[in-house]
Length: 110
Image (cartoon, rainbow, N blue to C red; front, side):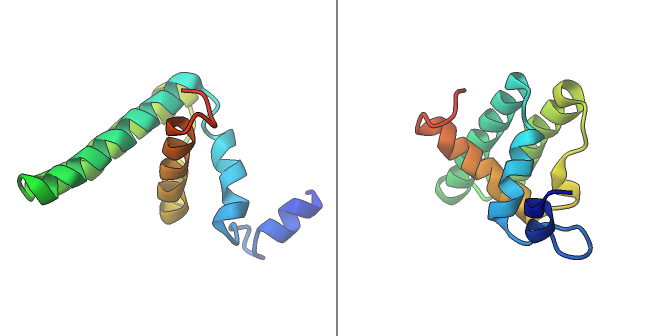
């Protein structure tokens, strides 16, 4: 265990902050196709939420279905790992949006 691991996690082994979690998040998304599926899913979530406000409330129901559908396909089919959202739901959601933003701004390749 490195010094970073000891300070980044609490005594139960859970990440103390999103800043500590995000490097782990990136290690769970090394497959390019999986990352692309995450970005597509997050884009569809943003569109569904916007349509929920502008068109029909049922788009709010569709938002998590399309978001998780694309992301979990990436994990189970391409990454061959278990989505971190099962253990870190809020950090994982924040990670999806940060990854989306980094791709949209050119900081991370699509």
